[in-house]
Amino acid sequence: MKILYIQCGLGNQMFQYAYLKYLESRGVRNIRIDASAPSLRKHAGFELRRVFPAIDAQRERFLSYGAGRTLHLLGDVMKKGFRCSLETEGEGEDRTVIPWGKVWLRGYWQEARFAEAVRDELLEDFRFREFTDEANREIAEEIVSCPSVGIHLRGGDYRMPAIRPVFGDICTPEYYREAIRYVRERVPGARLFVFTNEPEWAARNYDLEDAVFVNGNMGAESYRDMQLMSLCRHNIIANSSFSWWGAWLNRNPEKIVVCPAKWFHNYPAEFTDGIVPAGWHRIGRPVPNVTLKAGFEIEEADLRNVLGQQYADFELLAMDFPTMEDPRVKKMEGTEAAGNHVLEMKPEELPRFADRKYLEKKLIAYFENQLINHQPELIL
Image (cartoon, rainbow, N blue to C red; front, side, top):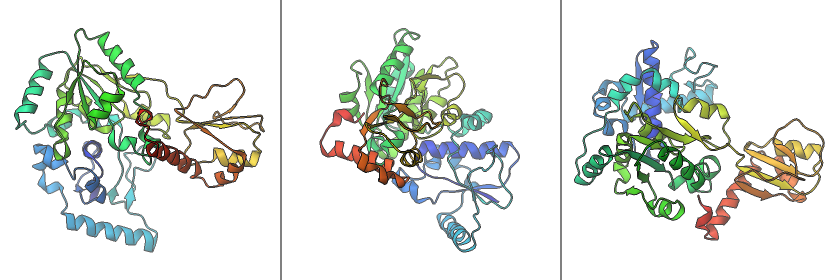
C-alpha cells in the first residue's frame, strides 16, 4: 500500500490528487489518502471531499484521521530512531518513480504534465457542487453571458514578511496592466471579473476601475471563487495554485490564459517551465528578487559566503573583486539594479554572511520594517 499525504490549501490538494490519478494511470495500485496533516488547519481543512462530490464518493480511498496520525508517528520513529525514511518526494529524474520500500508520497507535484495526462478523469472528479445561493448564481450567469475575463489577485499571506520573499512581488501592477492589455487586444468587449482575498487592498493598489469585484466567498466558501473563475471565458492568474486550477478547469476550447513568467522566487526556472501548460501565455521578464549593493571591495572568502546563501534569488553589485564565475556578480559601475528590492550592504556586515540563512533574515527584517512604518503602497 502507498499513502498519499494531502497538505496545505485546496489548489495544492488538487495537484496532489492529480498526481495520484497519474500514478494510477501508470499502473500503481492501492494508493490511500491521508488527510491528517496539521498544515490543513492553516487553510480551510481537507477540502477535496467537501468540494467535489465525485471524490467524496470514493470513501474507500481515505484513511481515518487516527490511522493517519498513528502511521506518521511510526514513520517518525523509523526516521529518527532507525534512520530509515519511509517518505518520498519522487526521487530520481523521473518523479513518477517510487523507490521500493517507500510508503508515503509526500510532495506538491506541481507539474502540468501530471494533470494533462489524466485530463478527462480530472474534469469529472473536479466537478463542483451546484451553487446554493442567489449571489453566486447571479454572478455565474453574468460571467457565462459575456466575454468574461477572470482575474485573480493573491494578497493575504503573500504579503507577509516571512512568506513574501518566496511568493510576493511577482504579480505586480505592471504584470496585470500588461496582461489585461494582452487579453483586450484579442477579446473585443472583454469584461473583467476580479477575484481576491483582499478587495480593499486590490482596489487601492491596482488600476481596475472598470472591473467587477466578486466578493462574499470567504473562509470555507472560498472555493466558490475557483468555481466562478472556471466559468470565465479567459483567465489572468496569479502565481497561485488556486487560480491555476480555476484556469485549468476552464473548458472554453479557445480560452486565453495569461500567467506570470516567474512562479516562485528562489526556485529554478525549470519549475515555472513545468507548471505552465502548453498554450498559456507568460507575461513579464524574470528578474532577481533582491539587488545587494556593496560600495566596497569584497575579498574572495567573503564573496564565497555571500554567494553561498540559501536564498539565491539575488544579484550582487560591488566594486572590483576577484573574478568568480557566477552570473549574479556584477560590477557596480555602469550597472542598474534589476532586483525588486535593493538592499545596501556594509563592510562590517560581511562576517554575518557566514550564516547561510543571513540574507533571508535580512530580507524578512526589511519587510517587517515596511509594515512597522505603515507603508502599504510598498506592499504589492
